[in-house]
Image (cartoon, rainbow, N blue to C red; front, side, top):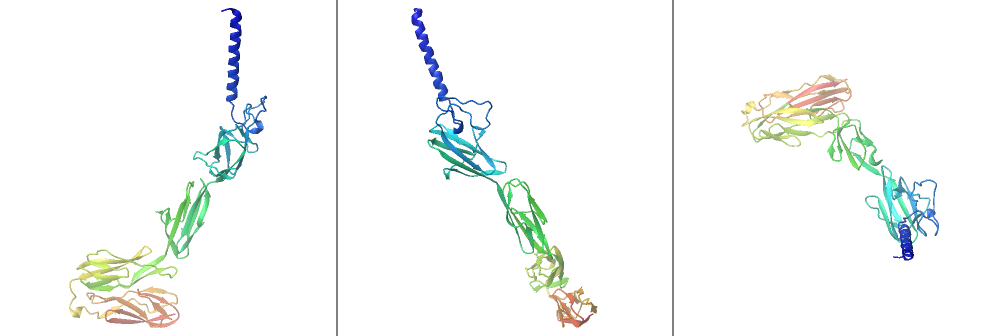
Length: 385
């Protein structure tokens, strides 16, 4: 081929190649903040690298997005922070994705586009599609708050109480304080028994929790009116007992038997004999127990041996005002069945005696303490000084 023909052809191929390269560069441009967008026919240069999403000199006539943020967090695009003080420019008709990045212990509370709710994906991305006009994006961050609901039953308090908020990852301590005369019975943490602890610390909170404290009376003692009981099979008798608390409140008594085959007992102390044998009736309150030994026989002894002929109790002749004494009745014959003990005072202003046999001296004077077992009665003169 003549050299004169080849040279024009090579020139045309070179021109087409240069045009293709120029077109490829124009198509490879990416979105940038509008404040940095280049004017038509010019290019933008900088003497130092920018650390925000703003580095593109080829985009012309961008659509401006205004990004507003509040709270502990920031917004990024293409891995770089978005400067909320400058409009962010994108190519008309483009789709733009931003990443909402809350600080540790914070979360994205809301996102809006021109005041309307904008979806935030689980990974924190926010996407705006088909951008043809300016928009305002507002993203709100807030600290993550967890709540501990703390409550207390009668006889004490917890502090703090109610629904208490605490920051994510923080610790919260709840104190459990009983009232005078009460003790901590147990503390439930989210339904699990933590025991009678005086305080509980929720460490490094990552969710909500519940604390419930219950209290019980402090019981100083439990006493039954008698220590023995004999019953004929099929017969019943009601035992008397009392729990003594530090603040004179009434504590609940719990009755039980060591052998239900021999005898049963109700929640109020009624014993029913089932078969010959021996068992122990226990009456409990506040962790303390009084015991009554029960013997069940097949039939009652002869009438002469089944009638109580004498009863006695350790009643003192004198007590000082305010003094307390516990007495227990015993009787003869011991083989008598169905016998229960009873106590009373003729002058309650001077001294009182309860159903279990506790005498409380009230004021100076004289009274008669009556002790009864079966058909037998004994009176003791008590002087309070």
